[in-house]
Image 1 (cartoon, rainbow, N blue to C red):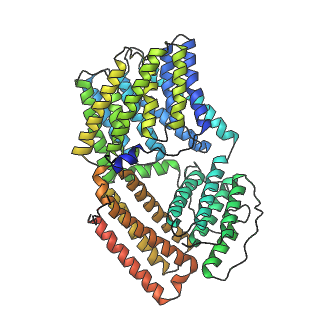
Image 2 (image 1 turned 60 degrees about the horizontal axis):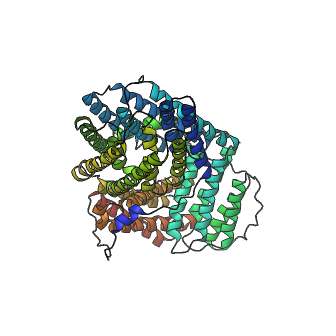
Image 3 (image 1 turned 90 degrees about the vertical axis):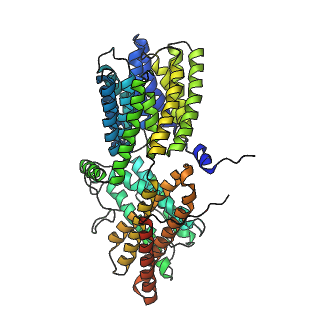
Length: 599
C-alpha cells in the first residue's frame, strides 16, 4: 500500500476549531438582508453586489473587542470598495489592467507583512481589484463599489452591537485564557512543559494584543482595562518564577480561581493561599502567585512591565517604513507582483472570460501567510472542483429567485461554520456562493462553472511555475535569520542576568525571545506542507529545541536568584552565551546540519 507523503497529510488535516454560532448567525443574516432586498425590489443584480460586501464582512467578523471589530470590519470593506472601483475604471484595456494589478499587488505585498488588520485589508484590496476587472462595465463605475460598502453595514451593526452590549468581555476572556494557560504550565510535567510554555506565549500575546496593542489610546487609569493590564503584569512575574518542574498543585489552583474571577468580572478573589515554602524556587513562585491573587490589580507606583505602545497611525507608518527597508518583505512583494502580473496578462490576452477568478486563484495560492504553495495548490484545486459540482447541482435544482437565495444563505452559514478548519473546506463552500452571486451580476450562462474550473487550473499552474519553481520563497533564509536572532537575544539575556537588571528589562528580552521562537515554530509548522524543505526540518527543530531549553534554564536561574551567587553558575551562563552566539553565526551562514528524517 502506497504511503501518503507527510507533507500531504499535514495539508489535508482538519483542525479542531470550535464553531462560533454567533458568527454563523451574523453571517447568515448579513447575507440574507441584501439578497432579499434586491429580490423584493426587482433588482437581484444590485442585491448580489451588496451581498459581496456582506460576504467580505462575514469573513472579517470576529469576537474581538469593539475597537478591533470596527477596524477589522471597516478597513477591509474600504479596501474592497477601492479595489472594485479601480477594477471598473480600466474600461477593459488590457495593458491598463496588467499595470493596475501589478501596482496593487506591490502595495498589497508590502502591507501584508505589517499586521493582521493591514494584512486583511491588503488581501481584500487585491481580491476586489481582480473581481472588479471581471465585472460588466454597463452600470456606473461607482455603483458596485458603493453597494459593496453598504452591503456590509447590517453585519457590522450586528457585530458592534454585540460587542457594545458586553463591554470588556473580550478583554476579560483573553486575560482569563492567559491565566489558565499559565495554570496548565504549573501543572505540566517534564514531557509536556515545553508545549505548555509555547501555549503560554500564544495566550499572552493574544491577551497583550487585545488589552493594550489594539487600543486607539492608552488605558484610563483606574479603569477596567488598566486593571487587566495589571493582572498581565503580575502574570509575567508568575511565568518568570515558574520552574521547569512539577510545581505544587495549589499554585495552579490559585491561578485558575483568579482566571474565573477575571472572566466573571469579580474584583475579589476568595482563595486559600498555600503556606510559604522553604525552597528558593517555590518562594519566588509563592510571592508571584500571592501578588497575582490581590484584587483590582493596576500598576500604580511602579513602571508597568508591559509597556504602552504608540498610536496606531504611528505604528502603521513605522511598520511600513520597516517593511520597505526589509529585503525579505521587498522580495515577497516583487514575487507576488510577478505572479499576479503574469496571471492578468494570461487573462487579458488569452481570450478567457474576464471573471477575475484566475488572478484571485494566484493571489490566494502565492501569499505565504496562507500556507505554502504546494498545500494551497492541492486544497484550492480540490475545493474548487467539489464546489463547482455543488454549484451546478444548486443551479440545476433551485430555480432563480428565493430558492437560490435560500441556498446561498445556507452555504454562507456552512462557510462561516467550517472555513477555519481547512482551506479546502473554505474553498468548497466559497465557490458555489460566488457562482450563485455571479448570475445576477451579469456573468450568466452555463459556461460559468466550467470557466471557473479552467481559471483555477491555469491559476494553480501559474502559481506553481512562477511563484514556486522560478521564484521560490526564501524560507531557509527567513527561518535561519529568525533562529539566529533568537539565539543572540537569549545570549543577551544571559549577559543581562549577570548585571542584576530590573524585571522590566528581563521581561522585554524574554518576550522578544518567546516571540521569535513562536514565529520560527509557526514557520516550521507551515513548511511541513512543502516537500522541498522536509529534509531540513529536523535540523531546524533541533536548533529550536536547544533555544527552548536555554531560555527555560536561564529563566529558572533568574527566578531563584542563582545567577548572582555561585561562580560556577556564572561560568555556566557565560559558556551558554558563547555557545548560543556560535550557533547564531552558523545559522546566519546557512550551514544547517542536515538530518535524515525517519522513514
